[in-house]
Amino acid sequence: MHSTGPIDLRLSRPDGEPASLKKNVSPVMRTDRCVNCGTCLKACPTGAMFELQRQICRLCPDCAESPIMFPRDMEALTAESCALSCPIGHYPEGYVNLVAAGEFEKAWELITAVNPLPGVLGRICSRPCEDACKRGKLIDAPLPIRAMKRLVSDMAHSQGWVRKGRYPRTYDECVAVIGAGPAGIAAAHYLAGAGYEVVVHDASPDLGGMLTKTVPSFRLPSDIIRRDFEALLERGITFRPNVEVGRNPSIAGLLGAEFDAVLVATGAPKGVKLGLPGADFMGVFTAVDFMTSVKAGYPVRTGAKALVIGGGSVATDVARTLLRLGVGDVSLACVEGECEMPAFSWELEEAQDEGVRFINSAAPVAIGGDWQKVQWVELDPVTRFACTEEGIRCDTDSARRFRVEADTVVFAVGQRLDTGVFEHTPGIEINAKGRVVFNPDTQMTTLAGVFVAGDVVEAKGSVVQAVASARRAAFAIDAYLRGRPVLEKIPDPVRGAPLAEKIFPVRLEKLAVAGLPTMAPEYAVGCFDEVEAAMDPGEAREDARRCMKCGYVDVRHELCIGCGTCARVCPRGDVIRLESPRPQGALEQDTEVRS
Image 1 (tube, rainbow, N blue to C red):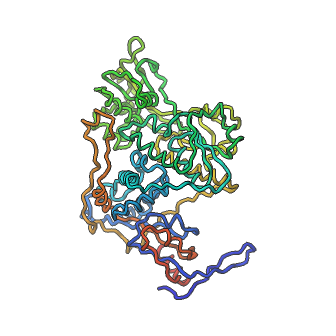
Image 2: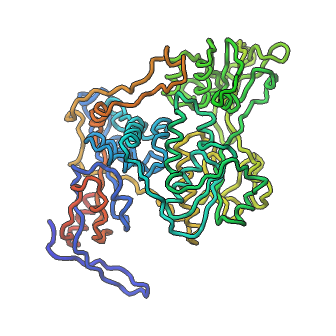
């Protein structure tokens, strides 16, 4: 199968003449040992490594309780993977399988190679990888990937695994980051890791941005925010608090003085109210104002009945906070139907379990009361609902208008930018909708050297998306400062593995799904303690064994130069063997088999 001597790789010299390189070794993958961590794939200098997904047989109803699938559907499923679904580039299968093996410190190294905020995202990530988990789609339930990340993060801090070294200083340029929220601090981490001096500015005295100000502690405790953020500052990022960029200094002033590039990651900190009659009554709040006051410890006067207007994650946070403030009757009204609500299913379930009542397909039309104090909200049933590029459009039936009693109303219908940060800096264009104009490929504004990230780009409210946006912006700033184009690496399409690698669920070990430890709802609503607890390490190991190992990494031998990088970086150490390279005929034959 393998040749005994080196083979020639024909390359091109700068003068166009062919050059020859002797390749003395070539990697051979032990696919049964590969945990698909993506380490070798990311480290390979020629792009020779690629991911394959095993096909999972679902023809027989006896294999699992989920419906059978036709062969074409099974084949289509191989184009998906948990890695492709992660916005920041995790290969979750890798650290899940290391958890299963009890190699928690190696799992920590995999997580932090990509993720600057593991404790935060281990608690409030929107879990797109779990939505893509084929175990959940085809057999029982997805792997609790987020909970495992949280467990490993907590263990790392208790066991002393957290990296203490300073970021490298490779370049003379200095970058200013405006905003100390998740996008700003993540971008600072990526830029400092690339070799730049980074200074983070924030108008607040604290780190964390909207995480610190508005995310309730029963979802994300404040000490976890401080722990993740301060761990990055200790490695060499400078933080300048109480600096309100906009007037003094302006962005132009920063760019013209000590900084070579500026990244604006100030989020969308302003709450929004719908233009309804009575929206300015006492007892009516925006979600931002309400949650900021609660987290800061300021007294918020609430009554016996509250109505939250909105259907997203912020709306459920507000509703659950109202219950903890002692409001006995909390309702949440939104224009979306039950299956269309933008909040995640587990958020809706948790809110419902705690006692929040949902009023779906209802549009508020007026707020009423006496002496400018809210007492009720009138709503029209929604008969048709659609999301368009211009926003939400719905038709209502005013003939069936109804009233909901409420002495506290909170609007959780979106947030908007504070454009004050862009004042006194000519050259940055703001469009008619109040959004910053930027190049979507580089996230650079209309002023050279000024970039945007996080909710300034698109106010999705998802922390993992904000970190992903920061990562893209950091790569673009690096390219800008080095004078080269942005070379964004587009992930290769996932290939289907040979049929010999097919997974038969009936052969998998039958393992019970571990439930995540959570506080009982009747106790949860009586305090602001964290609702979800950490998994037990032993239970996490057992549950991680449910991973079907859908994916693995292999090598395109025609692209491999035999440098051995893949073998050196592999965290398992016994997955990749360096052997004599295959002859050209074997390369072509191998390519045919795997295509």
